[in-house]
Length: 114
Length: 109
Image (cartoon, rainbow over all chains, first blue to last red; front, side, top):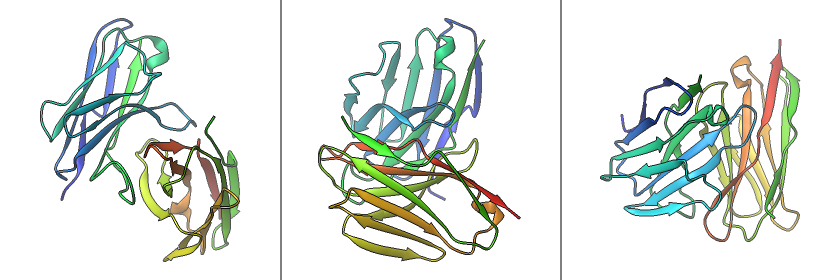
């Protein structure tokens, strides 16, 4: 089945220790997104790629970076995680960036910062 | 600023009908999405409306009024598995998806 895969599902890191979250997709979609979602809040868009064209949201902290080495993979790097970065990180894809194309989400990675 | 408003929480009874409302103020409009999100899981797509009116899909229906900046999601014949958060999201003129915080729906037997 075509899908969006995120690894790991649960990640624990120490305060200030860099961490990388990964996402892969078998849908062959052009657009990939990274969201941060805290409990009972709306997903907050951090980055999105249209193919290899990188788009950084204006209020995404510099502590967060992203890489998309090819169509199928996308990575989220958190350089120095703080306690406030504990959240669910959702990767999503869509065929295009507009119109009727819904976003397909991976299962998420729940990040705990100790 | 851009804003999506939904009730924080609703409670309904198994077998009943519930309507979850969403109002929005965005810079432009390119469609409205409803997603379902079970606790600790990722959102899954339910519906998309871009024209005024009602879209029916099985037990779920979604309504849109662009002039009023208003949508609702109607769930019929509620089942316990429908307990989840329901997120309203609007695509603005820049094709950015603006998300609401979601409505937590609690189903009681």
